[in-house]
Image (cartoon, rainbow, N blue to C red; front, side):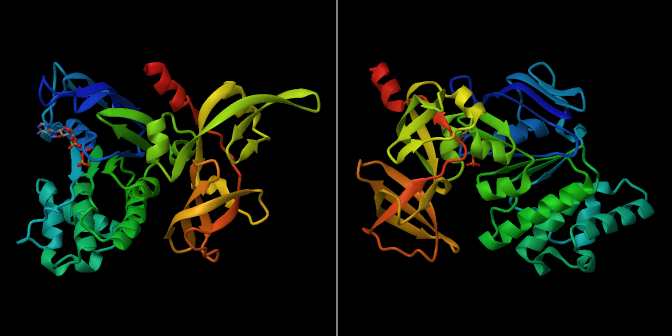
Length: 365
Ligand SMILES: Nc1ncnc2c1ncn2[C@@H]1O[C@H](COP(=O)(O)OP(=O)(O)OP(=O)(O)O)[C@@H](O)[C@H]1O
């Protein structure tokens, strides 16, 4: 691994729980990692620790095989050769775009510096804006200059802390795609912090979900969505609900198979790999909004509690006769009224179950 964190903990005060709690993960050279999680979960602290701006309580940070942080040793931030981009672009207002970009490479020879400025300007698509001042640029352009400035010295690692959070939603989505293209073209290894899932999915090769200082899972977007390691990840990523269910054995052509009995009916045809993982008995099953299909012919009916228009689809919240609530993505031409009953059936490709909360709560009392 190029960037390697091993059981890293950061504490602001001995009397407080650690802001970063025994976090381990690795990034390969050229990979983009994203840290995501609710406010206060420790994302920024973790990024600052990697940059050398916070000291390490225990554990290690290694970059290219060299320990840059441990409880005993910390390489000063300025010697780590890392680039940083923050949400407030912090461009120098009295300097033009090319002067801003050249600032971090002033020690380079003039021809080298000029060639590099041109190179990164091309990378971010702002060649024609080299002599403008920051106030003559849009927010998105300013942020691209900040990125070009951070990339100019060819940092060993680029750290980005919510760089788009001051921008409007449309621009953020576009810039997220662009950022990935730019970082890949530059061959940069980067770690990006956000609390926006769509941004994380658009940018990251690997995504880490944090809560209260702990890293719950470090995986690609597909795995996070379809194989969440913990209940928290399942809840935090995507739209879905947990519903009480029961794993049972039944025979198909004389061969025993597991199926999951849910309030929406039994789920059959579960892949062998998933069968092996399922324990018989009660559980909670994750039903994502894309696992529930609207079908007028379905025997199970549900009442629409709320609906949110999302362009090509509605996100309906639906109540079953048994009282449980589920979510469903339904194409937006199926525009039903709140309070209406519609037919639904489950179409669950990936079975995700966790220990029954009703049982664990009962056990804890
Ligand atoms: N300088 C500090 N001194 C003491 N505690 C701090 C300090 N900075 C952050 N914390 C605490 O550490 C925890 C993690 O904060 P951090 O800023 O890393 O979270 P975050 O995930 O980046 O949050 P956000 O998404 O809101 O920026 C929080 O409980 C916060 O209150």
